[in-house]
Image (tube, rainbow, N blue to C red; front, top):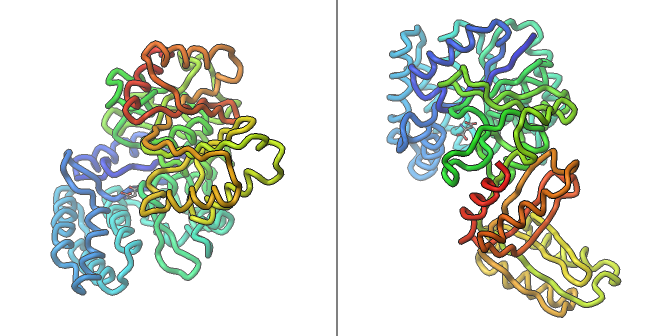
Length: 439
Ligand code: ASP
């Protein structure tokens, strides 16, 4: 049995948290490979090491040195090493790190040092080998993970290693320079390592006891999700559930390795198990829906043209305009004579929206293009939905009862979710109403 454990920023935030993580690892000999984040927040207004490191790089670019910003990082790591009571030349390691940040002038390199330092310290604390992810994780020339290369490297590098600590979040690009994943990317590293060593389980240790059905800031009594499928997690993470990086599912999914989200500070809690579809047991969850997640600030372009359905290439022409502006399409619900293009408002700033709409008018000659702004998208996700009737009815009745006006509906083709668009002002009320109706 092999388990890969990833410990997040709060689990690495200080000596006390690291001691707790060590206890967890040592209580189970199958926990052989440990992936760590950089130290995160110790309290609400604390600053994450990664954020401090981005600041270091900015300072280097502005004035050639990062002494001001780096001094806080130095103090924090020295304190951790002192409190852990380990024998590690941390001052020397920090000096080299600062010099490298000043010399390389790369935001990715600077940011990666949080995980690097965290892993060096934690490996010394556990008394196990430190293996740098830069030796194994490789990106291609388009910045995408080079799956085959990385998988082979992880397998061969760790083949004869009994136990190791590995930093998360970064790898090398095709030119051999350090490149990071997007924020929260240590989750992806953990998944890559789990796949490479053919682990039986990927444990993701964080500061909450798994996924909750919805955001507890909106519904304080939100229940934990005991079991969920890979695909449902993809949907929820993409729509804003922040427990796990949305891209962390893909590597383990191919090898069908389950992920267990666990709480470092409440290790006795079972957490959430993320499993393939055929291992999903409906009876584990009490409801036909698994979770509700959403995001604010979308813009809908409602395009209407009579006989649109008979016009060959209509949708392609509209999408070419959107593509021309480098904007991603989030959803594309359509009717006989209407097409709604749902876009993230953030991407339409600085006049892009007006120009894009004008170009659509010129290119496809619609009857009208109506722009609806300040829309929130809310996804109600549930693997069980496809097999049951009445889910949509329950959902829409609940919203009608609360007088919430639905501006858009899109049911994913996988029948895994129903996405609705409502005004930003109705966002919280809408999530509350859905929760109440199903849970
Ligand atoms: N330290 C990085 C971040 O703050 C990556 C991670 O923690 O997963 O985004």
